[in-house]
Image (cartoon, rainbow, N blue to C red):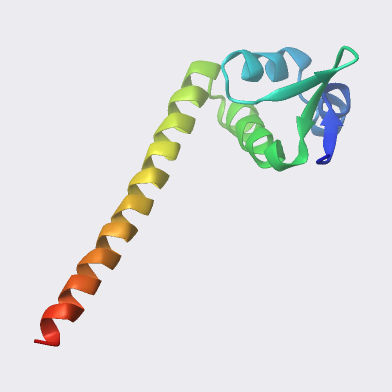
Length: 100
């Protein structure tokens, strides 16, 4: 099983409000696992929590704003990936025509 950390530990370590954590879950920005009524976040999702906490507490961005920014960044990454794929295909086609 992957490493995980409880919601209570996260709240203490990152000095965030438990309601903020719960709202991130409610907005679908974080996925938790529940076992024996304890909410856990997987270690692999910690960078997202840190990012959201920084945006919220340092930049004073509200939850709807976090959701919009997060979704836009995901779309931007998908577009970058697609652009790389298309550039690779274009390069391969270009290489074929140089051989003619």
